[in-house]
Figure (cartoon, rainbow, N blue to C red):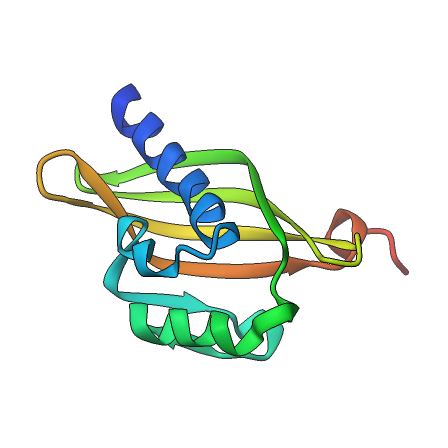
Amino acid sequence: MAPALEDHLAVTELIALHGHLVDAGALDRLDEVFTADVVHDLSDFGKGEVVGLAALKEAALALGAGNPVAHHVTNVVVEEVTADRVRARSKGLGVMADGSCGSVTYEDTVIRVGTADWRISHRKVLARRLPLNGLGQG
């Protein structure tokens, strides 16, 4: 079932806010995007799961100059699980300081907090490495 339009818009804007905050270095505002106990799954990058806002901030700071200078998100698809929980998939592009870029797929579990706000409680980041997900590659 599709979520209500206002919830779809709120979740889409939430996902977009992540890039604005991270690119600005506003890591102390990540609580506007993620739950306090967020699970940020970076297993596809060999980093395992980062649990909690403090650990997420620490991981970003440890990566330092290895972070993208720009996070762009697009192709957001939101699917209702319950009235207070949705699944969202989106595409992310990361532009590095040297001009190179990479593509990821974000798979998010987003939960309602309070009466109108939403936060990401689980994010899985999948690297896009092969065209067509490897289909036709032999």
